[in-house]
Amino acid sequence: EVQLVESGGGLVKPGGSLRLSCAASGFTFSSYSMNWVRQAPGKGLEWVSSISSSSSYIYYADSVKGRFTISRDNAKNSLYLQMNSLRAEDTAVYYCARDKGDNDYWGQGTLVTVSS
Amino acid sequence: VIWMTQSPSLLSASTGDRVTISCRMSQGISSYLAWYQQKPGKAPELLIYAASTLQSGVPSRFSGSGSGTDFTLTISCLQSEDFATYYCQQYYSFPRTFGQGTKVEIK
Image 1 (cartoon, chains in turn purple, green):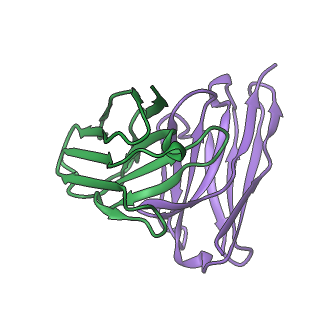
Image 2 (cartoon, one colour):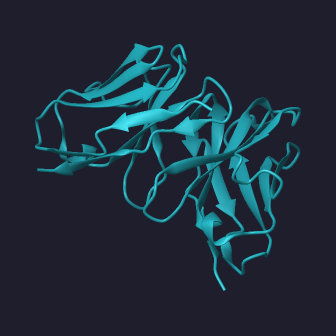
């Protein structure tokens, strides 16, 4: 059974940093690209970042470029999102999702709140 | 950037109704389109990919059509568990983009 479990969310002050993790199981993690998608409270879905299976290709939304860094460790079946210089508008539930173009499996999400 | 216009944003319907949701692209994306269902407090779930292919386990009352710039999600006979928010998403190019969402509510 495919499982994606995010962790690392919490309350952080503006300008602060946070590192999200996504633990994957039930599939060959190293064979798939992975995504981070976020959803601000009461709002729609926003794609944040994608990383290819071997980390050769990485993409970011303009809204996070230069502040967020996506990475993965295939030996640990884990996906990460390092978030720096956080802003109030980064407040959202962050989901990791398996990428096959579409996102066929999603984690339950982790809430990031940026507030003083 | 490929812009997406999803309509309507709110749809009031009754159990048993046939409903359609539209997604229009600012440029052609062939069939690189997915549809998701999201219920409150839950992660989105994939319903349809490649514009018209039903994800495994999704009821056959859901169907997708279209290619190029115009796409449609149809629910043929609305069930109580279908009241939710629906999103389209293009995966033709980066940045990936989602539609604004359509909330299907009980009439």
